Length: 501
Image (cartoon, rainbow, N blue to C red):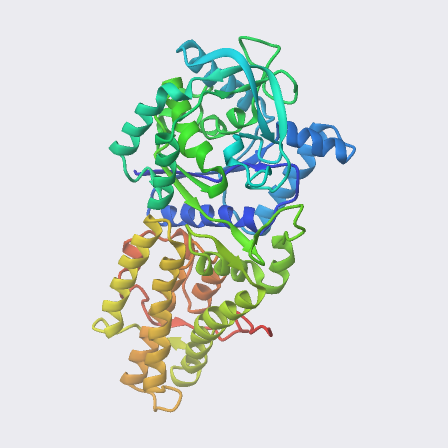
C-alpha cells in the first residue's frame, strides 16, 4: 500500500489562528482526503510550535507563563481545525515529552557524527522570525518579513556545520528534481545553497524555554532546530523504530514561502547530519494577502476562519480557499470574491443541479431515479475529468482539480438545459438525461469530497445512495455507471442557499 505522510508547519502559539494558517491546513487536509480515496496508507500531522524567545516574550506581555500561553493558544488552533473538519491523525506540541526525546536523540546523532561544534555567535536577530539575518538581507535596516527592527545578539552557542554539507545538498537536489516544488521555489533554494552557506547556531544560553541540550545542560536548542524535528517525532523517531521505518522518508511537507530556507536547506542538511534520509517532498506556497499585505498581528489585518464559517459554512469556506487560491504564488483574499465563487460554483451550479434533478425526478419519474445511459456522451467527459483531477491533486494543485471536477457539473446542467425534461413527457429521453445527471452527482460527490466535507454525503443521501462518498475508493468509484437507478430521490432544501454580496 502506498504511504502518504503529509504535514503542515507547526504554528507559533504567540497569536490566534487566521486564514493564512488555515489555508495551509485545509490544503493538507484535502490532500490527505484525496490519498485516502486512492487507498493509500495516510498519516496527516499538524500541531503547534511552543518554544523560543517569541513565545516567552508574548507570554510575558499577556501576564502568563510560557506553558500557560502555549496551552491557551494550542487549544485555539485545535478548536479552529475542528471547526474546519480537519482530519489530522496526529497533533504534536513541541512541549510534549515524546518531542523532547526525539529532538535530543536526533541532535545527539548529529553531534556524535561531528556536525555540531562549540563557538561564539554574534548576529542580527528578528524575534518574530526566530531567525538571524545578515546586513544585506535587511530592508532599510528592518526584518524583510516582519518589517521590524532586529536585535544584535551575542552568545556562546553550538554550531551546525551547514557549510560543509553544501555539496551533498546540491547532489540531493540533482538526484531528485521533484523534491521541492514549484520549480521557482526549488531554484530559490538552490540559489541559497550556491550563494554560500554559513554554519549556523543551533543552541542558546540566554534562554531556558526550550529543549535542553543532552551533552551540555547550560544550553537549550534554538527553536527552529526544535521545531523542524517535530515531523520526525510524529513518525516515531527516537521512540518507535518500526513506525519511523514505516513513515520516513515518505513525508510531504506543505509550507509557506517565508520558511523555505529552514525546510529546503537547513532541514534536509540536518537529516543528512543525523544519518536519516531528507524529506521526500516539500511543496511551497505563497502568502495569502489581505489588501496587498501579508497578514500579521502588527498590520491588524488578520481574519479568523470563525469570522467566515457562519456566513459560508464549512464547505463554502474550504471550497473558496482551495478553488480560488492557486497553490504556489501569492494569493489575495477578497470577501466579494468569496461570495462570487460560492454563488457561481456551489449555489448556481452544484446546488442547482441537485435541486433540478430531484424536482424533475419527482414529477416525471415518480420519485425514483433512473440509471445513467452506458453510452452517454458524459461518460467520456467523466473519464477525462478524473484523469485531470487525479493529476492535479498529485501535483498539489487543488484549484485545478476542482476546476476539472466542475466541468462535469456544468456539462450536466447544460444537458438538462438542452433537453428540458421538466417540459417533456416521461419516457426514455427524460430517463436518460436524469440518469446521467444523477450519475454526475454521484461522481462529483466523490471527486469533490477532499474539499467539501459535508455536502457530498448529503448529495448521496438525497439521490438514494448509502454510505459516505469520502470513503469510496478510486479509481473504481470514478468509473461511469456506478449509480444503479431504481433508488428513491429526495427533494430537499437548497444545498447551498445563495448569498447576497
